[in-house]
Image 1: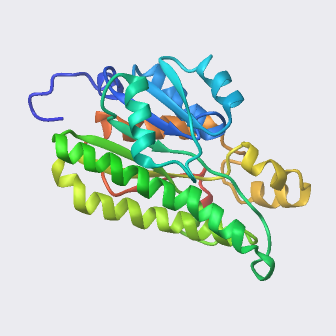
Image 2 (image 1 turned 120 degrees about the vertical axis):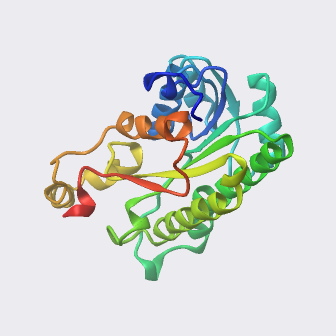
Length: 259
């Protein structure tokens, strides 16, 4: 965006003509973010290892195509080649929404679960953004890389999630590092740090009534968020409406961190 930009404020949120990749796009927050990108006019590649979820999502997300892949094992070069082929051109935006959770006390936490969680939440986003950044820098194209952080970027929220907390803390540092190196050449990196959102990842936690009541009592707004409330922030970060924002982790928590 510049002084000659005559678009309206609402037009700045549009993504017409842009190509977006959303990992974890088959369910939960990722699917909601893909929905927002598609409704804003983008062509969207939904990445997930679960074909059934992808097929269901493509049926409802506008302008979307399915790219089945497991971010833990896929080669980022092949993944982005597949996404570009499916979308018909170079990728402008990536949203790193793939994720899963494993809850267990630190003393018993399995090494294999530690490795899996760091792979999905930190290593895969780094490698995909690294390859996409190489392409965007080589072509002289701007871009937006949107990461999913956590309240664990700022504080220890609940016990029994050491790998998730470590990975999300790393995501915050990665956002700042990418911004430092690339934003001068038009490639921005930012993150969304969700509070407590009603998804499959939190379902097991909120099945415990005592734990659920304890969490809700500390949220000033007194309720859980819906995935769409995270999606609107991701859309903002992907669009020109946030053209002077980079290296930031935007907290969307209903006031949790203020209480």
